Image 1 (spheres, helix red, strand yellow):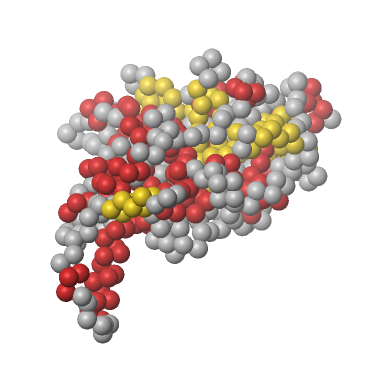
Image 2: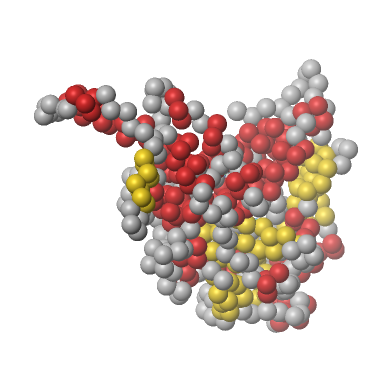
Length: 476
Ligand code: FAD
């Protein structure tokens, strides 16, 4: 009865998934809501390049790029690197998933520059984390229209905050990645051998050579070679040429004679016209609902209140609960497509963020608004916290609302919101009720919040307080 009521209230209903993987169209009629994207890629599509490492979004070996069209009129695309071990398969409906197999392969002799440069700069050893590393790099390059002129060394370094490597070491990985940066020429590479404070891949090799000279007895080295100064060398063979640059500048100049165009996997035309609709996937044990209006969401939640359903946005917390804490939920209600949860607004008296704003979008907007004279330092305090919040892949999908409702005692965001006097806006279907509650009254105990069984967190209001000599807000 109840189920029918929900379905009747929200027609039409889609009961399958449509997405693309590496340019190939996939229609999945038999998805299980507890399948992760990684599991599907590896087990159903046989794309085993993306690795299962920690399974909890910490190591980044499963990183893939998920792109979607965010404005059908302008055709604007949003690209996000995500942990496919946490992402539910159902969450990529309408998206284009690009995996390591999609950007190039040794077998097909079509390696992408993001792959070949990692190889050429000795930035891969056992190789387990490499697909994730390459995809983080590829995602960063793809997110920028003109990577060679817009990405800085810092931008590129920041892109790797979600990738762990236990054997190669980060220096060669970062050196390889930074060769794509517009300001690579500002690296003081010419003096780097002299300065102990700077370590590049080239320096590291030289320092090893020095150490072994000290320790191992050796056949006399020819005097002539002691005076030998290596110079730029070019050997032109009959079929192959050999170059030996001796400075990083020369190496980069050589590399820049290669095509500058960074290829991107084409975004499927069909998805530019894709309009999300109410979706209901009935798995064998779990159901997945994806409402597309706030009205549908509120009705669904009042039909399935409390433990009868679980709201899910980025799934970065819920997946840990189901996989490691073995919690069971009969229904998931995905809240990623509700417009009201996506707003970011500034009024003369407050900042207003929808509960579904991802931490990446939040970071960008805060940077744009940041003005301590107007906001009393709250933007900067949140920016400082978010810099060390999880990783790029997690921030790309995790929502502000999810962090608040989690009520984790180690939340990075909640202490700042409490200090700022934030107010939460909660909605429920019954009598269209909307109430506002100060965030300080919202947290009741360890992971317990003052939210009625069928309530939805819709907005977070942060009052703007002019900085005075008496009060200021900082985070450390
Ligand atoms: P989900 O997992 O989708 O949901 C979390 C909870 O919120 C669920 O109970 C869900 O039902 C509820 N919910 C979601 N939206 C709404 C809504 N609109 N109304 C009512 N309820 C809602 N946290 C930190 O604070 N700092 C960190 O550094 C950090 N690092 C992490 C690193 C890793 C590897 C992982 C896996 C997690 C980490 N987290 C961290 C925790 C988590 O990423 C954050 O809490 C995140 O903000 C949760 O957002 P989400 O959208 O993924 O939530």
